[in-house]
Structures are given as structure tokens and as C-alpha cells.
Image (cartoon, rainbow, N blue to C red; front, side, top):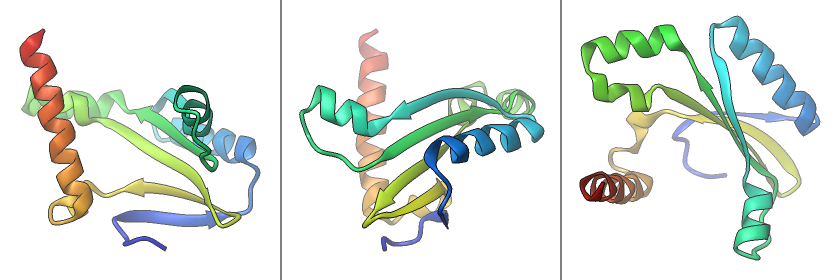
Length: 125
């Protein structure tokens, strides 16, 4: 398994049931589902690459976001909670990242690259 950078749980639930339960539980906590991205289909269709089952589900809590935005308007872009559902070696997992664990990790460097790209796009607009 990969280095622990968040919370991960193995599950035997079918993907559709898992997604339904996540949506229900997040809604009970005041979160609104905002997207359900099927990375396997995207990779297969757009890049012609085989990809195992992998979904990114986005949830947004307006109350949390407003509190963060009140402190700093830019922080609203980080108020989306992304949950991933993925399969590795015929085992299914559900995970959420803890961004505090990324500072000294290779992934942190990739996120720096993404941030630099985003800044460049904003500058060009």
C-alpha cells in the first residue's frame, strides 16, 4: 500500500452503493455533492489508457466555506472535500487526503506544480 497521507478504509460495498451511502452521510453533515468524476472512463476515452476503477467525489459545506471565506476570500477554493474510491489488486478503498501530510512528500511537489500552473492561468486571464 502507499504511504499514508490521509484516511483510508477498505470496503466490499459495490461502487454504486458506496457512492449512495457517501452522498447520504455527507448530506446529513450539511455537505452538498457537487461532482462525481469517473477517472477510469476519462483515462480510457481521452488518453486511451487502461485505468482501474477510480472515482473522485466532491462535496461542499456552505457553512464551513462561509467561515473560511470570512477569514480569507481565497480559501473558498479549498473548501471542497474530495473523496476517492479506487481499486488496487482487486481490493476497493475509500480515501480522503489530509493536506497537512503533503508538505514534505513527493505529492506536495506535484501540488506545487499544479499551484504554479493555476497561478499562471489566472495571470493570463
